[in-house]
Image: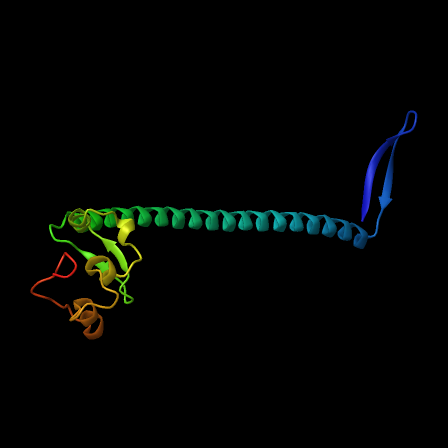
Length: 161
């Protein structure tokens, strides 16, 4: 490859020619192209990585918002169920399979003139009937055993009756 450039040495204008092997020029151009390609590749990877991270952050934000929404819905449902439970005119007690009181509605608390903390975690037959053992013909025991509702004609609110 030959390149010419004008040169002025005092008065006459001359020309200088520079000769470079073609392979040297193409190697320099190819190196510049490679550097440009690497720079474009790095920029594209950075853009893709940023897009991916932004997408993941947005997914997490959407999931968090959905969890908050479901949490609020659960709280509304729980409040409605609690209002129904406490608003029932009958005394309602929820016991576990060990006959420990889990919940008592407001009607039962009013009838017994006691607070939930007086019942919670204690055995139903001790708190409601003053008994050390299960009540004779216990409806809770029958319900646990059969998996069906159990009913009794009369339930005593006062121990011994």
